Length: 106
Image (cartoon, rainbow, N blue to C red; front, top):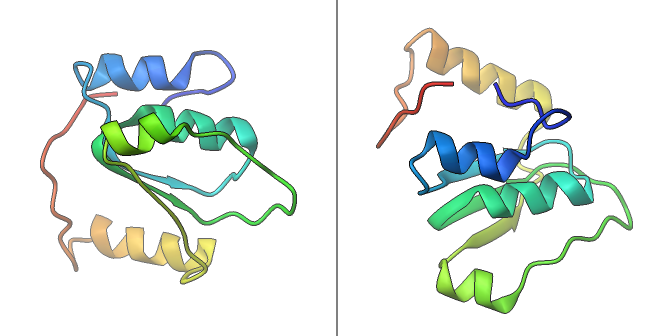
């Protein structure tokens, strides 16, 4: 677990992934800082999925970040936090199996 209050999240993610960044970030917080940290934690071809709704919250991403890193940023109201946690329980109990391409110890 990375505590965003005590460390620089993207820097810590890069350390844990040998500089590559992560494939996917699911953001339930939706603050400007969490969204910027999420984008900066993504690796090449990474995807940010924002599930939070806070009217007026903005964050900045440069066109260079999007294009050069082939990032995908999307929002979804497909699920609730409860639904997401239910899905994670299915993974935990091995009733469904995620596709994992790499693991990093935390």
